[in-house]
Length: 403
Length: 223
Ligand code: SF4
Ligand code: SF4
Image 1 (cartoon, chains in turn yellow, red):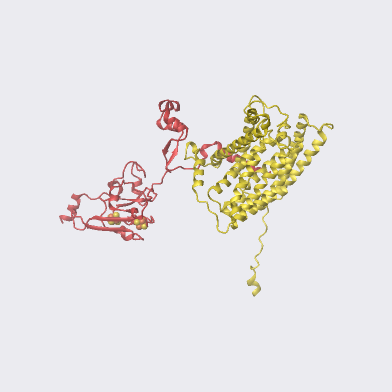
Image 2: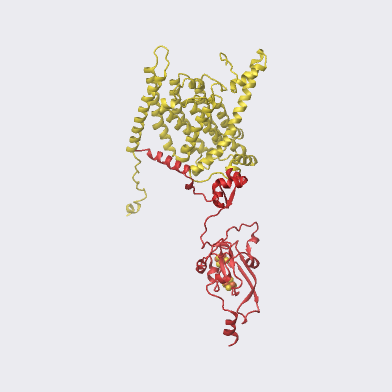
């Protein structure tokens, strides 16, 4: 935090300044610790509470999208439903299956939830609202979000249940595949903002990157919705085949933790998208940056919800094909295009990109995106699914041979 | 264009979202109402309604007012409780004989009030164990005097099996809402509604009037 004048104000830096003022110079580290703990506490609680509200919102909106009602009995408009859910979860028996690996079984939901909280430390909510301004923030985000793959595998493996194991294996395969295009999309962001820190990504984002590189935005949203394993990509827990996937054996509070992490994922993803592609807290007019940030995140959240409500689940092979044959080449192409444009457009001495450079990049990238989408669509249209001819059964002609 | 179907799907769900009348859900036993709907029910404008009963309007706005609601029911629905008319029943026990499960128990005694001995019996016991009934309706088809009808109710959940037995007292006292299944004559009756306020009387329920006592005496006693 050195080098920054601590402005008084109701933001994270302001809170730090308040504690700093209370203590003598030599106890700076204590002020830092106290402020950090308070802020972390506030963030985690805000996240959990908003997740609870979001579960209600998601179920209501999902119901509306699918022309049914959603929870509506308990409290006005069913608003108290999350409370009822939590009470139910807490009063349920916490079972551990026979022959399960107890420690891993217990650890899995905790790891799963903790990764979500960790990511949130790096998201700047406003120009002075951040817990950490890590200079390798983007790498950290990629690394931490891949830990939940491990948690899923732990859960599936430790519960000693075939279906949980199937779900976990599918999950691992899918999550690892989708991490590649996601990382490449983030790499394009890092190139254009010339930084790996989430904070600098926002400060350098004069033009929202969603406009500058729509292809990267599309790839990131697709890969991220696969990362949080929601409906078009929810084969990890497909009820029709696998019970409920890796958390088949979980009950009570452990299951509640999985649910919490699962419903927290869209919130986190929309915050990341708002930071990386929608220029974070930056906005116009007298409206404070935090409000802008929350608005942008909400818009992304609603869009993700809309996708979830609409598209049916993909099959395993289709999902893998989409990742490796669809998103992966596209993300490579995007990275290549962005890198070339930057190399050509940037100031040869300082290496900085001006606003007009950004707009030029946007124009080129929109053209590329349009062409690529048309081409991909035609390509898929040409190899329309053709039914394989029915193979004659080896038993079909047995009678004829015998004669 | 390949992939346009995805956009189409998005449009469909968006239409569902913005148009409330595309809702499929039928709520039971009650549903939440909006102040607009409440005002329409009481036949005044929304604002008049809000001014007159602000408490109710506020409750409705926060989604806490409910009105009873149920699905429209077909009159030929074969419901759980049976409707039985003592006046029409002669105690012939055809229903008990025809029931494939043998779950109707009938005990009769001479009624003594009839013109001719044996014309009509008094029903001491008429137990129908609807816990085992399959609602085939054969008992209703068998009844020659249109005394037994299927009912139109369905809220018959009980805690004990023995509470599921419909006794003669219950048959006598419960409101008469016969189903029109196998009894098309009821459907033509004016004002008939499977859950209406009005009971269907024993005269209305049958195909023909019961002969008057005078007629009976002329026919049987004076011969
Ligand atoms: S409806 Fe029930 S009581 Fe009547 S004949 Fe069928 S099984 Fe027996
Ligand atoms: S209900 Fe009908 S069939 Fe049954 S005893 Fe009475 S008259 Fe006979």
